[in-house]
Length: 309
Image (cartoon, rainbow, N blue to C red):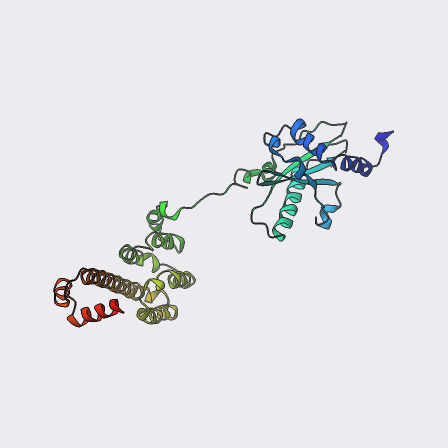
């Protein structure tokens, strides 16, 4: 008699069954034997309303969503009720769609860390045993080994110079090669001169893109009074195209070298001032401080006055 019940009545029965947190705990702990289930705080298990799931998804069989906590971690149990006599071959895609919907709702709530979603299929079909793979990634066919697994391009570790040898109309090898030296102006200057031949092979589109990168990376490494000159050089390249790239590289290299020298002298001057201050504190006269630091006597007196004030 029960076999003639409409599918929704079976669904309602199972939804009623798993509305109890003890039943859910028994399912994940004693039936499925998840290794982490022993750490679930039973009092934190609660059902989650799923009325936010898209209308398209809500037309399929009733599902149960519960959440629980394991110490400071939150986990969702997504329980699908399947009572058809035949196995559903599209189950992987169906589960993935629901998981995306659940995560989308969490993102709308403003969560910083997405909770784990554990999909569980409760299948009571009699006519066929469940024989669909439980690996959701297999739904992506040839891409299954790369979905949900990211790879890292560590620019510092990359052999960008080898990529430059191809001398194609691509910007990435040039930018990566220069990025590796962005914090060393001496090295950056050398690499700029080195990639000039690559830059001269770029299309107008990629020249403009290179200038955009240079504006955000190279320009800030110039002294304030140099930036207007840089802007003028970059403007000529935009107007004249790749033909002006040689002039751009030589002038930008010069500006970087001047900025480096200026910073070096400024740093040296600051070190001299600090040394002079220590001499004054130790009781040296203005004449002695000036002789030991090569500072003008007026500068030493001004420094002493500022320290007294």
